[in-house]
Image 1: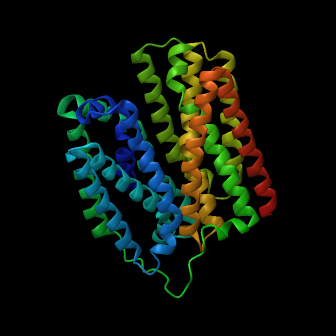
Image 2: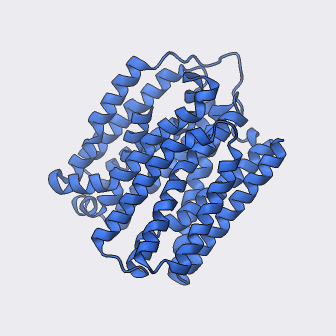
Image 3: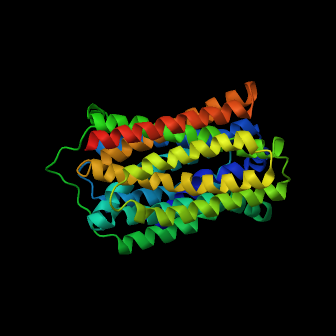
Length: 371
């Protein structure tokens, strides 16, 4: 599952470092090429909302293998695409895989391990996500310069084939509970703790991506870093995030709420720190490294919260959370950009800090409600 997450996230974000050659080869603008990420996000939202009800009765091992098979087809279609329409069709397919895979991730982990091992299992699964976040963009750029953007995309295909074979051999049969009507994704929102949790997770990801999306222009314009220093800082963020993902499982064994409260509060503090002393390169590097540690590991906390709050409806809950997260990321990045262009980085980072503080306060309220 972790290797599958790695291949999937690498596929999702591969266009980030290849927009220019894609645009040149397909005779489109870089903005149109950038829609390759938008279309995958849109199809991920749609799939996550409806896969639980549409796939009822299907063995979950079969469903996961079908999604990995679709990833293989998607990578092949994109790498061989003769025009923009076929290219976007391939990207839409990876969006379906993203929505389906992440919607079922928590429920699958719960079926593969005993209850007390679920946080660690989710941390291992998300480790693949964290590792791909570290290397996907630079690897895509490097491979693109050697073998072209099509070759870079196709490099994910053999990894996906390995995932398919590995899961075919290692995953047990996971028969769907035919006798039980799956919960409605939207029906879950009638439960107060679920509603509050989804609002909290939306504020968390809005706050995270309001700031994170504009880290590069902030470092270049405010801290005046060169390209090599920028790459080093981004690498440190990725490495610290991977370490945080590996460590957070132990912190979630007894209760998830302390992590859900403390992590966004600390990230809000870091956002304010970047406003105050971010012009110093060393200070920016240190704070962004800490940001990576917290931000990348936080989703493990939220997936663990989901597994414990909705043990019988983890698939429907997972679909709902994937949709909320995708929409929150889009809203955060959009609002952050408007503020960055219109007022400046201080407004963007202040908005990030405010959203993160709201997420921490909502998590505290959830803890009180759960008692």
